[in-house]
Image (cartoon, rainbow, N blue to C red):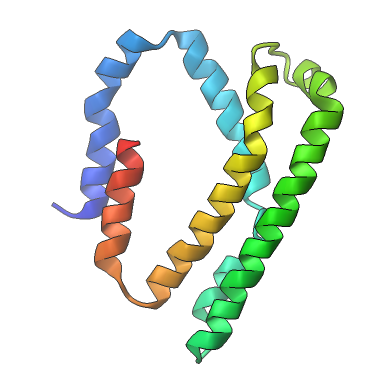
Length: 142
């Protein structure tokens, strides 16, 4: 079995357990949280992580990794300012008052996603496919 197939099988195997632990409302809040965080996380690195594969020298590629991470910090900080300033308005716009508390976790999710994406492309550049597969399995298990 490959890492991808194992990574896809884990959520499928765990879903009956999760449906007994969490309510449908909890899954709804999680889906809303992830959709907001994912929309912001797409821009977290300025899409510079895609350029990590392009340079001939590893030093140049590592500079792009560093740039991606710096941009992630900047986007996360801006997101934090927006959440602190407009939490009530965002909560009202999303139409779910329970999401208000969870909005404060979006900046850290955006930051960690940006860092993850950058290092994921770096590992891909270094052709460490075993680590990528292990990473997918661990990610699906968490």
